[in-house]
Length: 198
Image (cartoon, rainbow, N blue to C red):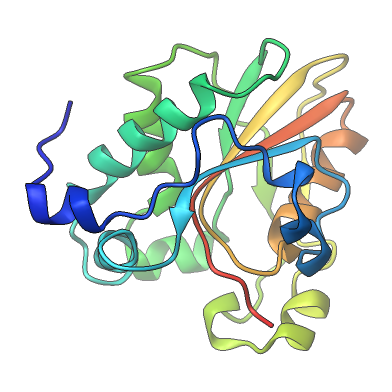
């Protein structure tokens, strides 16, 4: 287990183990009604928000180990069927070049040290869009439409999609549509944190 100081542990607002957000009132604030389950560590507050921000914007890559570990603990508690494949929400190649890494891939790598699931690499982001973090809710919903495509068939498979932060669910909805169009029967989501954007 990665090291977690007592102060951070005491301040971390975990969601209850095994809570599937699709079974809560939170879904009314999200647009990803095409997903089959959502697990997350907690809400986007300190210290989780700090770790995610450091990972995404400050190249503090070691934060991915703790986030992946904690996310694996949440997914283990879900009452979901057995997952066949796992993939990370992809970045557009231009965004990857400017950042140098995909934070969701790093979280997935740490997650896979805890739970072994085969990796699906066929989900790609083929449409370059403005960063979602710089957009308001309305623009998030239109910005990301048709941004993803699954280039390898995944017939009759249950897929776990990993991302860092769930805000409106627009990216997740678009990626889930691409995965289901490629043949996935179910798509479950594992995100580091939920940051509702109302």
